[in-house]
Image 1 (cartoon, rainbow, N blue to C red):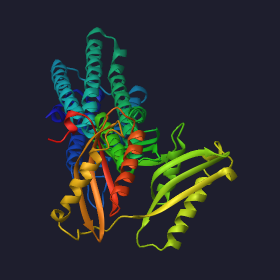
Image 2: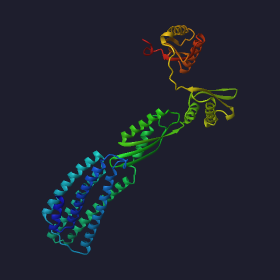
Image 3: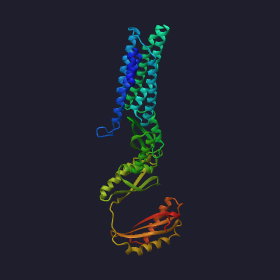
Image 4: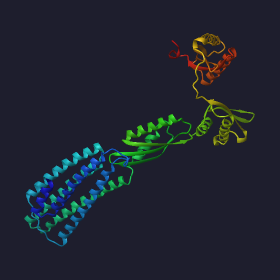
Length: 460
């Protein structure tokens, strides 16, 4: 309707300013149709051919609108220069023209505000481009109204030079169109070329740096397609951390980024040594690189030499030769650790590795538990009688003896003083295991679970 009214005014007034407004509004109509179609396409979900979705169709449509705006601005400038220097076109201003243009300006103000609100709500570049069009229409319409008013005043005052106000108003409209087109084109081009939204990379980097378990954020890459963001984050994590722990850190990074901007987040982790990394962490990291499990890791100085000892778990189906080769390779890597070189000379380091099978077999008891219940009671009575020998020991319960594959195995819970250090507790449980095996030589394996002497840990 507005386009029709402006075309009517162009014919009735002969004003180049009104003509430029009619062309501008015609472009807005075309842009609205393009926006409607592009938004519908951009809402389609990602598919096999478009794994990042269809969001960039909005930015491409904005680029097309930019080209149309600049072509229109070029025509308006050419026609204005013709009227200023080469042709004299009589303009017929009227009060009706001013009233209609004022009505059009009011409509443009309403449309710009409404579209701007919707564009912000849905983060749509296409809708934001349309809102920008309509907001600049307000200023261009005002310029045309001033031009027509000046021509009207010139006719009544004899100031013939005011006839140039109309082509000058048209040049003002062209300037607005070019300004809008350049802004819109730059934004569309930035998105099509994957330019990062200003400041977003820094915000993501600082937020991720603050997360527990993240040593540093090494790189953040952000790209946008329509109203969706795609964020790639590379972080460094402690190299001795378990796979499950690293996965938890990755989930935390994804959640933190989503709090900043709704995005599809890809996290890449780089294992790094922490500042002031302990020797044991470096040794565990060396074992993890080889896919080996170690425990009972310890180290001590003796006779000017450093002894490093550990238990290595290997596939129970390996031969001694194969298992020994894995242990030897790990020993050599440990001796070459830079951190170890700061503690002792390589020739003064002795690495001792106890090799044991990595349990994978689930055994079945040879005899029912009832048949060895008496032995369980004897062991419980014996351990509870050792409380005077071990001041930290409060009592023993849940004693179970089983015969498994022709071997007697024992498990029990021992309540101990909760304030004792875990190293002291480990020493006590080791001594208890030795005492039980000495008293009951038929028991081949003992597992003691220590519990603190606290109400929630006591058996009912």
